[in-house]
Image (cartoon, rainbow, N blue to C red; front, side, top):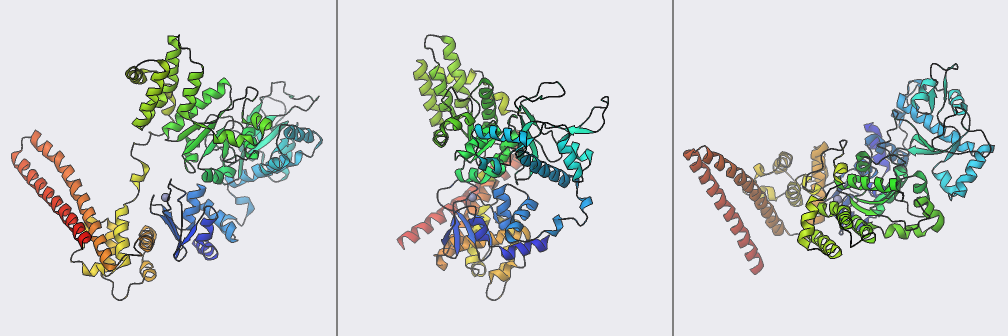
Length: 618
Ligand SMILES: [Zn+2]
């Protein structure tokens, strides 16, 4: 495994790998670009060809090319390995067991799904398959889309796929486990299994890396043919059941193809049906996925979160679609997505597929003009508002209030309260009061039992590793002599990792060579050093030694202030506790310490201000 990693790293260049996903610009000895992992206007994402690593100074993410592929593709290490190995032309022996019969069960299920996909694709050339193909073309799909998404046809036959797969060497039990076949009930006279999908147009469903894991089958009635031999009505859509490799609550139709477009557009258009996704893709809106007839789950949304925080809902225009939209929006709000609603304003079109068939590429404009979720519900409520009915007033509030309530920005909130007050002709204070009491029908969804507790109000940025330590380390890397010149290095203020690295640097003799120095470290420590080194190259290039000295002192003051503030905060609690216990001695001791710290803080601040002054006047 490690051998493969170094083989891949030897053959590939981190700049080239990352450059194939995003725009990189040469900047001195390094490359920079706008970070794909957080929103930013000015680039703080850097790649160093010399060290073969990348690092974002904004969100603190970084690592080698494997880390990048994991992050941007949203995959785990083995997948990233496969992707990069394919790129590098490295064969991964480890993934091909010597004995084909000892492949694990999952691998065999993947193979069954792949063989089934090929089988269904081929059926389009059969006499009945041709009708099905023509039907899909009539619905507006192009032959190219059909090929690209590997659509196919399951013949109207009970055993054709099973027979084929058995011939390929798979057991009946495996066909049942893959969901492609169903075991005959015991009481029936015939034993064995039968095909799950019969006389259906087949949509293969892929996991994030593009491997087929299941299917959706849409019923296709061959003109004049006897359809269902069992005599039961045929469901319009049949999906693969849950299997070892397919969990419908965790797979979104089209995501493996759309993920890069989603990243690029920084938005994902969510539609209901597979046909909607395909037609949208064909019309040029490729950042699209379908929930594929199943209800959207928190898992689906967490999957999307890897690629974007912006969702555009475009569900069917019927009652059920409106309900599904509301439910999806509730779930998405709970995960802090920014939500827009894509509107189809044509009564003849019940979904995006209909719309694209009728209007073609105009679809891209419709998606681009999607409304923020509140505007959407406000406009809708206004359109059906009857000013003479109290009921109508209530329903306008009920439609909009849940969204206004959840707005974080008070400016936005007062904007909407003013809008509502103007529409309903009531004072703003009345709207404000009503918003708190109105029935909140999003509540049920935002607290899905399946979903974890909503993230705390702390923005994700705060959780990043201590960037201040990285900054301190980057300064001394630029000028290691600082470590010898400074009378005392406040190791106690640094985190353990940084302190250990700096102690080692301080005891280092002779000229400092970064490449040699970092070679003694491994794992997170080595990465911490690499990141600090990259930061030092990018940030302190123009700095003189005196500037660096000042920067170092400045950072140390900041660290010290942080430590003092933390201690003072905890002392306040202790003092309250001591007061409650009427422990006079303890109170005195604590207050003395508190005052000392306050004085220290004062000195630090004065010293810093004084420094700035001398610098300015000097
Ligand atoms: Zn970033």
